[in-house]
Amino acid sequence: MNINFTGKKVLVRVDFNVPLNDQFQVSDDTRIRGALPTINHILDNGGAVILMSHLGRPLKKLNPDGTVNRKRYTLNHVTSHLSNLLGKPVQFAEEAVGSETQKKADALLSGEVLLLENTRFYKGEKKGDPEFAKQLAALADIYVNDAFGTAHRAHASTTTVAQFFEAGNRCFGFLIEKELENAKHLTDYPKRPLTAIIGGAKVSDKILLLETLIERVDNLLIGGGMAYTFIQAQGGSTGNSLVEEDKIELAKHLLERAKRNQVNLVLPEDSIIADAFKEDANHKVSPSNAIEAPWMGLDIGPKAREAFRTVILESRAILWNGPMGVFEFPAFANGTRDVAQAVADSTEDGTFSLIGGGDSVAAINQMGLANEVSYVSTGGGAMLELLEGKELPGIKAIGS
Ligand code: AMP
Image (cartoon, rainbow, N blue to C red; front, side):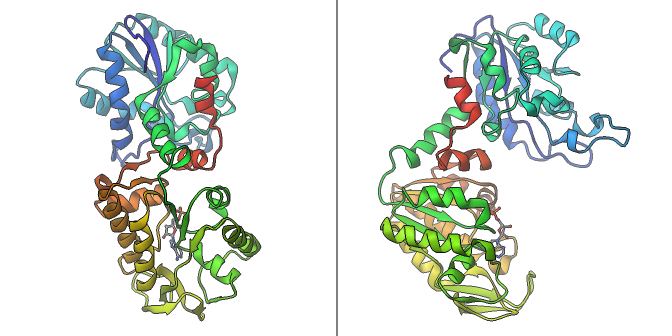
């Protein structure tokens, strides 16, 4: 944010893709609050702010007559909430581009805020269409990207638009800066030992992440549903646990690679098993490799919790992605809770800890420990792609 904004019109891509209630009121404003430091910085420095964002997937849920469902997806649902948070009026442009919007942008004064209609009302957005991007760019002098959650998408408002601004007139907002800086603690200069705790439902969602991590980390703790594919790959019986048959070979390959790279890959020695996928199912402790149908592993067991905790406390940098069990059911939330607590305790001891990915973020919030870890990422998919070593289009567009 090293640009002089005085007297300039600044087009800011934010992530206002927030949940709404039945009355279309904002029900969780975390993402809006996340953008406030950038917006306020530009306003305090004498700039005028033009905000753009997507909200939902309007082109996937068209009205029966083929038109966009504006009633449901208009970004105007956010205007009054944003206005309250900023403590000043927010103007709204009913189209993201076009002559009326251009007039509104031209008339905007320093210190004023204009919010554009949902960028995903336009086909050009997801296609990264240069024509659409050019019209957006024409509204302003400077482009700021602060939407980390969509930085891995090559859309018009996140990527293509940047090319219409010179290098000195485009930059990241504070949120993206913070995300990139924190990711570097794991990718560029991690303290050692570096530990990744990976959980969640499926191996298939996280193949690239696991493959990357196996080249980088000292310890890899695997919990959640995905652990059972690995346990079967080792020849264990897993009953009705979630196993991806077509990923068993891959799991074998990953286990071998871990050995070759001297990565300490730890699977849960025991599990909490249940006789049905239900909140009130019968449950008991079992070795993870001796589960018989109809039983299934829905959480890591007490020995695994202890083993994971020991590794976590010995670590100096930690990535956590994915819950250790079906944490939405209280009976199967202990593994996730204990891991969250261990990460918090290790952090207190000076370890750098980053929580990335939707469900682990929900879990750390549910446990009330979000303030006791080093960083909770706001962008699930984008953070994972960054940690997978990919170059995100929205990041590259600002840099090049
Ligand atoms: P993900 O989005 O891949 O991080 O997966 C999160 C989901 O995985 C949560 O909804 C959990 O309930 C689910 N999950 C975690 N452990 C298990 C398990 N052992 N069996 C089935 N689902 C699980």
